[in-house]
Length: 329
Image (cartoon, rainbow, N blue to C red; front, side, top):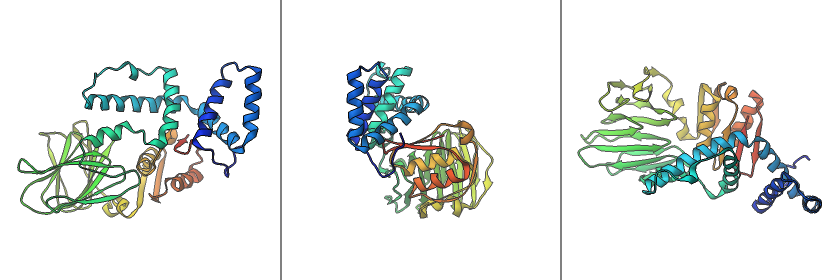
């Protein structure tokens, strides 16, 4: 059965296809098989929906566990934030529950099911949506340009201007007022008086890139401070910082103009960036593929085009299912 690119199933047809797939994997009767055959032939979209369901079913174990783990941790954090009990039996995922969770997550992608975003946004003052680059002016006239799918919290009391980066990345153009301007990300911070710089969260820490001026970066409270100047970058995490290095900061910060630029970056890093510009989910399953290097500049507004371009060069497979999930392997 070969899916047709010109046929787009409705959400109801997609859910019906999953129901049929589940039934047919559980000793269907002759009557069930006949009814399914009639349903399949009734509309080309039914065949397309069923083909997509088969792809997801075959690929589901690994992304199911990945997504279920992500969602269980995020949902537990959300419950904690709402002062609910810390250990809920609903969050103990078995293999079978992970599969069911995967199917549920796929169906609900279009409705914005993203508990981690809810947690980040609970305490945020400014938020950008997936695919949106947003510039805001703070009370001191400093400006923050939020990368797609980012969030910050702002506190200008206690004698300093304090910003917490809760998700994503922000580019800061800081006015000189005499009060320190501090951006907290994970357990470290970037401290300045007047400059232009970016702070970006990473899986296990954060990264600071300076466009102009001077920024003092510490990986942990009370830790040693590194001074960065224009065209320098440093990453830190788990209480320690890497050695600062020089780079083309204009190219690094080209996301503000709609471009993602890479030099010998891993495909995993590229996919992580594309996730912020895609309204659904992108799941990268192959660890060896994830480690392969990528160089080039790509338009951030079209994650599909970027993946298609990389697919032509790197030869990986990608499957789009239920309209909002892309599986790369």
